Every structure is written in structure tokens, then in C-alpha cells.
Image (cartoon, rainbow, N blue to C red; front, side, top):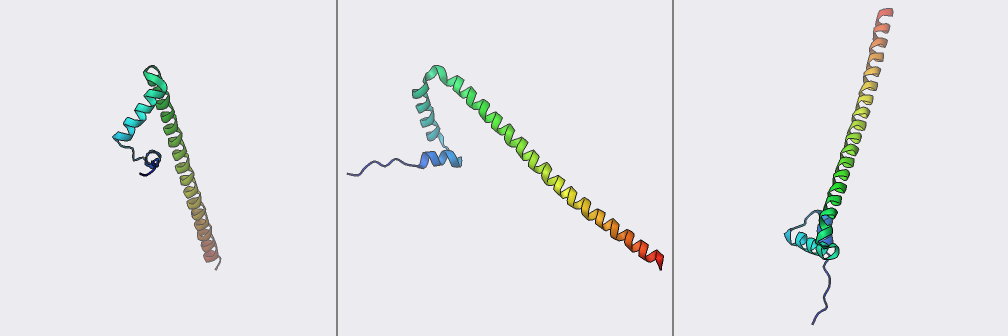
Length: 98
């Protein structure tokens, strides 16, 4: 009949975040076969630790980007305010000399 073509749906589902119960069951079964039941809890702890570290790093990165954005906005506003004050002083100086 036809040839068996492996599906790319599983890796794409892992990347896109659309992992269902069947995919999780398949992943768990493969890990159980590869690593055995004795090593699985240690591997799960390591994986959880890595995910936690990745989330912390992403949070710090996001906070740094937001603070840089706020500093840039404050800098622009400060420059605009400074220029406005200079113009106001020039107008006052020009008005008082006449």
C-alpha cells in the first residue's frame, strides 16, 4: 500500500505550545523507557529547576527592558521640559528688554 510518513505535528505542537494529553502521555512513555522509573523524579526536578531559572531570567530581562523604556521616555520628557523652560526664559528676557 503506502509508505509510513512520520508526522511533524508532535515537534510543532511542542514548539507552538499546543501539547495535548496524548502528546504528554507519549512523551512520558518515551522518557520512562529511556531513563527508567528510578531516574525520572530526578530528571523532573532538574527540568523544573531549569524552567524556574528560565522564567526568572525572562522576568529580569523584561524588567530591564521596561526600565530602559521608562528611562528613555523620562529622558525625552526631561529634554522637552528643559527646552520649554529655555524658550520661556528667552521670551521673558525678550519681553523685559523692550
